[in-house]
Amino acid sequence: MATAAPMLPQVYGQAQRQTTETEPLIDAPGSPIRALSEPVVRCWQRWPRVLLTLGAFVYVSLLVVWASSNSDKTIDDAQPSAVQEESRVPARPYPSGEAAPRRLQCVAWRATGRCRPNGPREPQNDKKCSDFIVNGMSGFCEVEDIDTGERIQVMQRHCTSLKGDVKFRCSDAPSFVNYRFDGHAAVQKL
Image 1: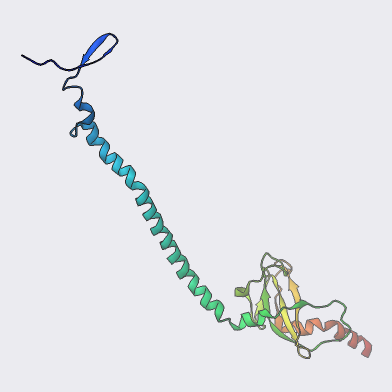
Image 2: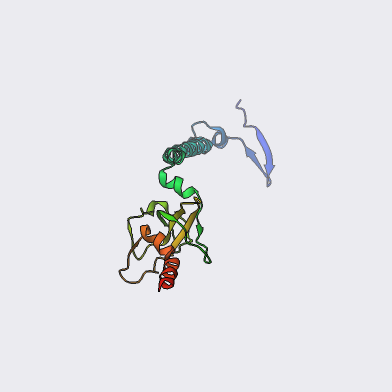
């Protein structure tokens, strides 16, 4: 006697029979659906780890590049040059109502930015006292009072304040500052 297939509950009035064709589609290990879905699931489980590793590698690489580029600057900053030593002493503008001449000596031309004599300092563009200052340069001549050691800003210039091909040197600054007193003394002699 042949055995009948087990009966399943009735759905919509028909009895369903369990067959070997419908059941293995879900659990069959060789199913094409399962074969495609397993690598995809493994890939989705692996991508956060790969992304985290890649991000850490890029971060460490950027830190190494940044540290190596900044290491040169910190060495230079630790050993200041003579120009930096001189510019650490703040110079104040020359007072307009001076009553007596001063004995001054030139220190250097101090370059500034933004085309203003009171703009940000640009030490890389500083000049010696004997160098010519031409139109297009902004800054001031820094002089030192021989008697007091005070540093003073004189001959402040915007980058457009010189007309034509006029040039000057900061070595002339002490004479320029005392010109008013020399002029008065010359008139008194007459």
